[in-house]
Amino acid sequence: MSSLRGRLVCTVIALAALGMVIVDAASIVALQVYFRDRADTWLTDTKTRLAQAIGHTSVVVTRNDVSVLLQPGYVVTLFDPQGRVLVQTPVVDSLGNPAAPPTLPAVVGKDFAATPTTLPSAGGPQYRTLMFNLGTDVRYAQPNGPPVAIGSALLAESLDPTDDALSKLMVFELLATLVALAGIGLLSFVVLKVGLQPLRDMARTARRIAAGEVHQRIDAPNEGAEVGQVVVALNEAFDARQQSEERLRRFVADASHELRTPLTTIRGWAEMHQHGLAGEELTALSLSRIQQESARMQELVGDLLLLAQLDQQHEPVSERVDLGRLAADAVADARVTAPQREIRTLVRGRTVVCGDENRLREVLQNLISNALVHTPSGTEIDVRVTGDHARVELVVADNGPGMDEATAGRVFERFFRADQARSPGTGGTGLGLSIVRSIVAAHGGAVDLVTRPGEGSVFTVRLSSGSWETAVSRTGLAGDNEGEGRVQ
Ligand code: ADP
Image (cartoon, rainbow, N blue to C red; front, side, top):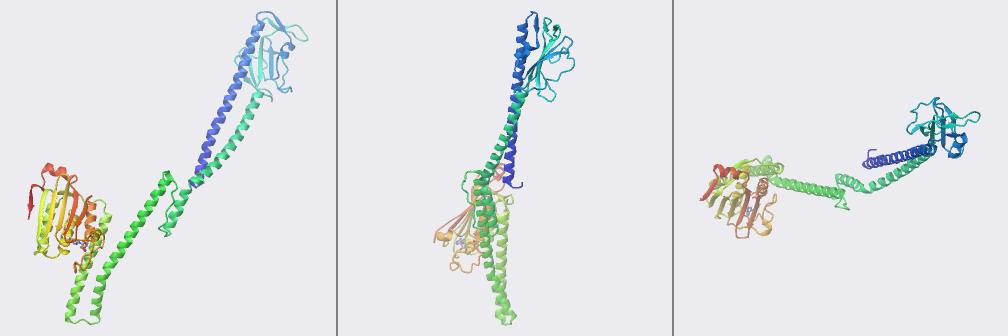
């Protein structure tokens, strides 16, 4: 049977059958031992009583003396001193019908059945037997002759009633076992059917989700039970999968939308050329626009690629990076591209972190270029890197227009750009800050923004010094700017 329920029912029945067979066998063996012990006790007691009754007096026993004393199922056989049968009492079963006597050898030895022994009979019951010596003073009165010496006597008790009881018990136990097993099988089938229902629900729901009904979820009646926990975990997995698919769909839609604008522009200018509509002046303009738009597309594609890599890469490169040095480089670059802007830097304390230098440069470039691009000229920019044994903090602050709460809450979203009218022509992709957040998160850090309209913006990146802290403090590697904050 291949179904889980079938296998479980079979296992339950097999285990129950094993247990019952063991109990049945044990009870039959115990009863058998009990009956045997009882027969042996009768045999030894009778032997003792006879020995006591006879004593050392001279006794002559007749066939009648013995047989009248015996109950049905018991047999006494007397042997002469040579071990040949002298006489045997008539054998009848418990109902008084004649029965076969125990099968005896023609001549019995002295040690024959010295302890209780089971003997068969010719087609009749089995007998428990005990033979013992009667001494020389007991003789047997032959019906047609003089009394003869008796060598020994064999007591035999038929095991027919006990065997009968045992076989009846066996039949009863067999029937009871079969009925009990059928009941257990039926009950476990029903219990498992109910208990495994959630698993069938799970399979059905999973199939429906796979078929496109992505909002379907499995009902979890009892969340504490094992199956309930699986249901909850699966529902969470379905939720996560759905959210990630929706994010991906939105991302692809946004990316296509962003790429469509420059492509349409390039195509428009190219078609104008193709139809020979552009004069000399327009040709120059069209080439410049085509160049601008393809540069924009290149930037966008580069950003998308970087984001995709960041989404994939779980462990960033781990190298020793001095954030203070990177900040100084980034500010130097910014001063070249925007010589008219005032950019101040401050590096203080231990500024070494563990991470990917190129990615961290990207963080600095994005934050500084945002401060340059999204603030009017004349706005002052501060870049500060400070650190201690535990963490390193990078702050890029400006005293520009700042942002309202709604805008500030969305700047880290992919493709989000605040009101274009406020910062016209900036041409950003709207991916800069989401790249910053992804890189910082991949380094185990966090980035936040404090801003208010008219009060500038302060972006703060917090990274932990990590394992580099120990190495840095031991060897005094570069990046330890303790006590000499450099302001430029
Ligand atoms: P991009 O700069 O390409 O537009 P970003 O993700 O870097 O995209 O920034 C998202 C938006 O956040 C920008 O469009 C801008 O409106 C706003 N922003 C970012 N930095 C600043 C800043 N220093 N001052 C004011 N607005 C900012």
